[in-house]
Image (cartoon, rainbow over the protein chains, first blue to last red):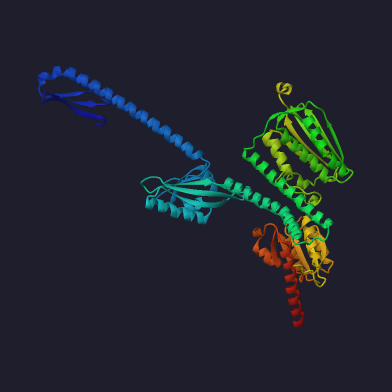
Length: 434
Length: 141
């Protein structure tokens, strides 16, 4: 008699009768009365009661069905979250064996998420799920600690797992272990920190390179000043030579610091460009005009083909720095008597303005082309040809790509000169008129 | 305090891809009476060392084609040059691998920026000590 109950009918302190109310047999109500004469009177009362009872039962059933549906939907949702999480997640039982693993966790264990069951019926030892014996052993101990001490969570510092054929060759993780329920289960989430580690590595590499680049001019400055102070220079000519070195290296140091600051501001997104309408034709003419004297000193034929009216939205100072850097590099690296040509053109297809700096110099070795825009990258064979900060092209790339959403590149063949170019989206016609 | 006395006509090879460093160091050493041969990178230095007549090598570490450490390693490995002491200038000595330094038998690391006065003292001391040891070894033989 599941889902049925006897109901006592009490009136004025007397038990009048009992009704067996059954959910499944609502027609078959049994009425048992203490006073058979009251049966008729009771009929309507019982009928009322029955209706109320039925209503309550039905609403309770609806609530239960609803609650069950909500619970089921929630479980599906949580299941989906669990499986779609990029971080590997494991559930360990009281013995430290894995009883749940999401696909990311199966992947690091080298298991196929489709054809593999890890559950309470098929528990897996932790060491088979984390291919780093030391880390697996430590996570095992930590989960035991969480379970025994009742602490909320334990963190383990970074550990590495092999990365199958990927670059870098290892992936870095940090494990967070939490108590899951009263049955001694623990939740292990492995946060991937490979990217953070890579960023930290790049940062430290940059600092090391920057410190090397800063110390080099400092060395010449310090040495020249010490020798001057020690009275080592016999005549005015020697004094002038070494003070000249100190001054030139001071300028190089200042430029290096400025370039580093500019690049880091742009990369961090805190640069404040003063955007406006810039006529790249006029700007290129202006920059090239300023470099004529340097070109004449080196007997380089510096030419420009640029007309006014090629307007872009940009920061004039930053764009002038890009043109100045590209033309300056051309002048520095081409041998005497060679030619550097600057052209500014509209490119209709991409609706942009393209500035090109072509030289008839020695060209760039193919192995260096791809790395030319990296910070502090220098072409070995030209290292002594010119002195620079090693940051000029990287600054150009940052200004063009990050600040102006443009593109920058180089085409060259060894022995056949080089063609550096950058393009910036052309201004909207309305802003061109402004 | 000018110790420009006769330094026994010792010949020092100075290798650095930074032109100004070579000029400053060469000026200081020549002022102290040494012969100075200049090299623009590791390969240039190695070919000049093999020509003979070098008593001490003062090299930068970061150079194109061959680093100072590689250069010192070659000098130590070649029986014709293994007797030459090597001092190395470096802008990041703390990042060098200690085992590599020992293997290359570099006598001393001098951090950039350096004092030419201290550099000269180290050159002088190394040559004195080296020549002394060399003499003792020759006598023992």
